[in-house]
Length: 418
Image (cartoon, rainbow, N blue to C red; front, side, top):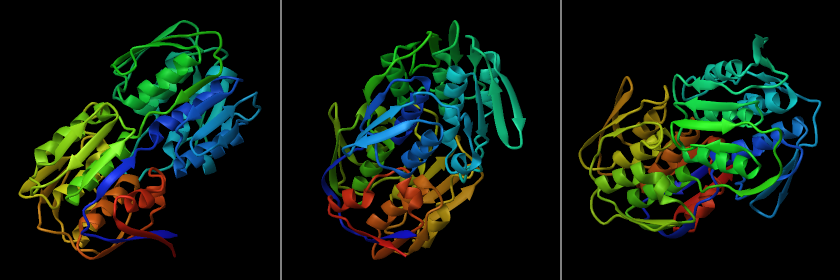
């Protein structure tokens, strides 16, 4: 099992490039199930979650080839394997995205219910209710969802709550349905917009992606396409926080600052200096950071995936801050590890009360989930002394070669295999 050893207290300086967005690449890869022609995707990161989806798609008969560092070609000529087994789905909840495309193209699917999630329950009932409205027969059998429909039909679907994977799943299914499907209270995340852009390149007719109302006019069939995945806004935001925490000066290139407006606004409130261009963002800090209050919300609000990183920052900001988590339960598991490093944080219900301390101290800490692991790396970069972060396989799910990128900015960070 790998661990990271970080010697902190060094201001990060220089340029770093954001990778492709994990949460956009995964549904784009799954879209290959909708057609029998190749999809060519550029800027696909090498991540644990990407490897998991490749394993699942291979099982379902998709041929996946990587050329160069960032390009994947995927082709589904036809498949007799329409079951996504538990041993593949349990490691990543996004695997449930195969349900909609399989039913839309092949008329049936059997997909394992996802396993438990460290940051709280994320049920797929909204996905299933939407497919039923589109004419699918859905049943549960021995931990599996079975869905059948000779041909899905368009429907008006109102999600009870905003769901990114639910919006993506139903949007993919609706591209091959008879008639028009309208999604109300749809997720507005940039990753949803990116998937719609790919599907439209494949011949779909989707309007309104990025707004709460999405309209999909079904077509008889789709065709192959080529598409570049958008930059990863969470990786970009993580490097922005790293620059501010260490009192550095970092420019992140090949990113979209417009996807990070809520993060940029809060960084500026802390006293960080943020300069934007169309495709880069520079973050500097020259003064002591100030505490701010944060409340997570679906996009375009403050992203829950940046909550842990900001908690690390606010733990060394002057004054008090309150972080309220409204999206997921159990997303404060990094708190106990930050306390080991000298942070002053108290959790009451869905709120974390953070009193800034002058500095953190290096300590052995353990990652519990993807974004929690990022927050501990950031804390280690800003701390005095040496921090050892174990169980970094969580980190590898969503950050490609993060220690190499940080070393390029001057950080003292090494990976070791225990």
